[in-house]
Image 1 (tube, helix red, strand yellow):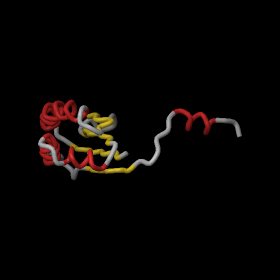
Image 2 (tube, rainbow, N blue to C red):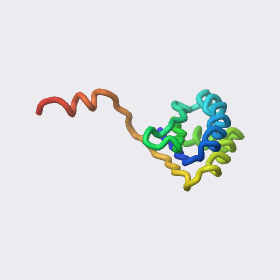
Image 3 (tube, rainbow, N blue to C red):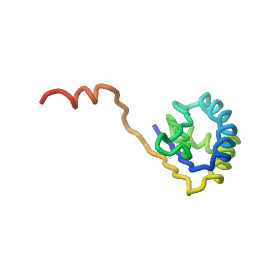
Image 4 (cartoon, rainbow, N blue to C red):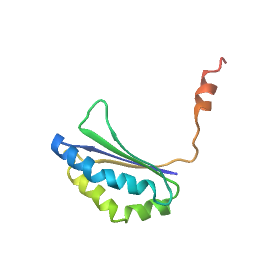
Length: 108
């Protein structure tokens, strides 16, 4: 699995513009083959920061998305960021849930 995060620091005016332009992209991305998660989030410590979070099952499906016409709107949003966008692509080999917390909290 590949996790992609893009953090943008936006003025209030640009933040509204980016949200309205990316909401349809988030919706259409969610139904693309291989998309497991697509969300747009606000940083609670700094509301100027908007984060686009995506999870993809394969590199091939991610690359198809990156070449899509929808992704042009993501690239345009990056241009509006006051600071350099923070872009990360992380490969995840395994995924676990609450069992990790339970195992760590067992008396030992």
